[in-house]
Amino acid sequence: MLQARAPDVELEAYRGLMEPPDQFEDGFTFRTVLGAFFVGFIMMPGAIYMGLIAGVSLGSAAEWVTIILFSELARRSFSSLTRQEIYVIYYIAGGLAGVIGGTMLAGGPFGQLIWNQYLVQSQAAAGFGLTEHIPRWVSPPAGSEALLQRTFLHRAWIPPLTVLVISQILARAEWFCLGYFLFRITSDVERLPFPLAPVAAQGATALADAEDDGQSNWRWRVFAIGMGIGL
Image: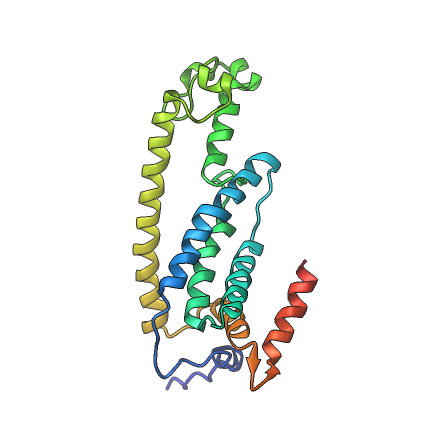
């Protein structure tokens, strides 16, 4: 007879880091909408510009900078963000950590277009006779006015930008559909804990519970020390 498998002690300890709540609250509020606009109109363009100019990305620092900024603004307004609101803002700002093109170039999806226009004008491509075989939906041809002026604001970039937008939409649809399907399997069927969810959840808990009965919460102290070391 097959013996019952012994429970995994480490797995059970990891599951116990963040206990499931008794009741759930909505984290999509007006303040999280403001956070989304802040990320979309302030942080994201700055991250893309930094990637195109310096070749570096803000990385995960952008997530916590946004969260700390909004949590401090809420405190100065004699209010506070809930754990759910902080986590939603964290998830929205997490898009900045992935501002990397398919060729590992910083600058978001536009980083790929920068690489494409370099390839079209490179001596290596011209030497192998590849320049004339690169289609217009990849990059404008060598000698194009758009490349000479070094700008995306040109009609020659319409086909590459159209392909880029369509591919991004399809990628997001694939991400949500397959992500939800695999989530249902691992969470509801296999009952496995999400690998890094407790890390983000405890960070949100540290910021939401910074003050507890007039005394600093231990999570806030650990978060502040880790933030100082990271900076």
